[in-house]
Length: 163
Image (cartoon, rainbow, N blue to C red; front, side, top):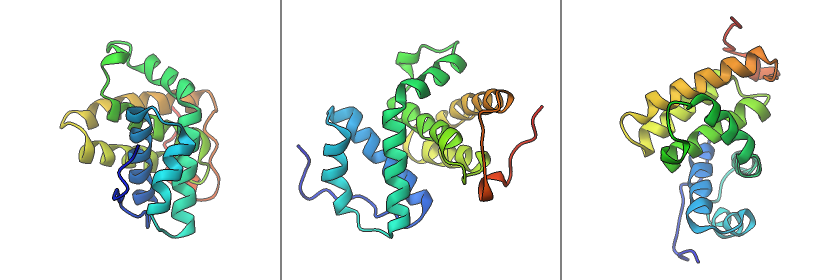
């Protein structure tokens, strides 16, 4: 059960929403509680503008429901690293970024990766951001070569050129 006094940072921006989503996804992994239980317990205590709250909720729902597929990408590009040894926070950060690459058409790939690196720098170890950057860059290249990156509107900004 969660502490009734728990207060998370209210998501005011998409950056804040990603940070809150990371906290919620981490809470689900650690507690073993369902997504609905965690969202129900924690999100009402995070008043925010509807757009930031909707963005946060969408990240949590798509990342949590697609974690097997997202983990498959991570496994593929961390072949020299035992998957079970990847820090949970690093794993969640990468899942969020890959989820954004695949499902958030209005978010440029560069933004998804940059945001993941900022989360890693804030919440994980000193070396995590380099590890995460390498994995995400390889996944982005693979997704681009497979034509699986679909971006519209703002999402087309800063798209790396296919090689």
